[in-house]
Length: 206
Image 1 (cartoon, rainbow, N blue to C red):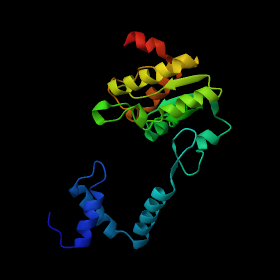
Image 2 (cartoon, helix red, strand yellow):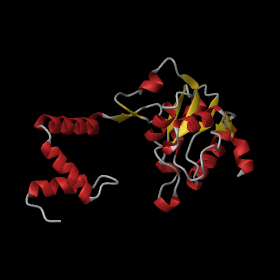
Image 3 (cartoon, one colour):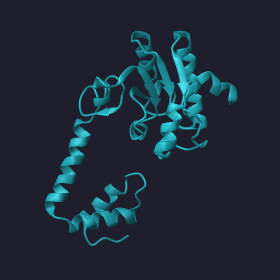
Image 4 (tube, rainbow, N blue to C red):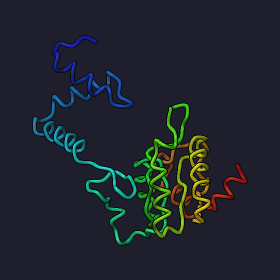
């Protein structure tokens, strides 16, 4: 791809590093930005810099947050005794969009995947176990995607939670096997949370 401007080429190369963005799409985006008022491009640049510099992980649930404690954990309307385990922030957003869940979350930051070099030590599993040990949590809900790696992660965490005597459940499998949680429609996902089953039942059926 030949460029008449080195500045344009540099911009395209940077944009093309984003996931799912090829060079042709990056070129279209860069040309689109050139057609917009300078103020709009400036606002975008400032928003991205502010995002990178100021967004932090919630000290309680590891969700992305603008402050030390996220709005969900800080809310007096949430049931702090029920914790829903999810892979990342996209799953938090998907579940929140259903309007069916009033507990809090624990974001693992991924799932166990030896093929990708991700082990339990790379996730926030230890802080989850400590949270269950030292706070009055009555139920832990497993809400990971219906994949083999997610099932492995669920079972690993379940074995750690079992001696602590906390109730464990998993979302109902109305979600097709292999599907990512974030792509499940809100109605199905909402019903799967309300119709959750004891985790032991999911083991016996797998």
